[in-house]
Length: 159
Image (cartoon, rainbow, N blue to C red):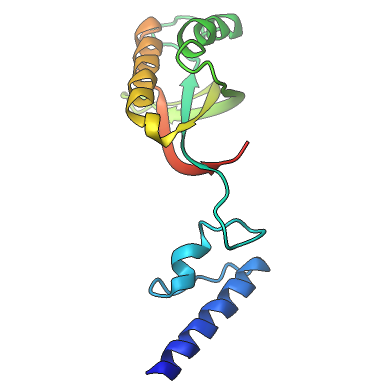
């Protein structure tokens, strides 16, 4: 039994070494290395770096319904200043992009869009979630839109 555990551990270490080389090796889930390999930093694999945060990405489209003109850059930045920045004054990242989506009628729409990235401490998740939902509601109701996309991830952050 001890020999089997030793072989399993050696195999797991080999896979970790291979994965460092970008092989895409996957560790068996029951090995101790598999349980920590994805959370340890690449350099100095023995210690987690950073604090527990959540990352939320919001996707804001600018196309409107019923023949209304698209939301302009000036209108979006006014919304950012009025609705988003006061709720997340510690910082945010805004990226411009292009998105496609299927509306309720089944039509595929393409539009200029914005991706907002928010990072906030995990212990503020409940309060931050409420603020994010207020932002989403404000945007959709202001311009009569169907939705603002949202993606959440737990991450480690080190500034």
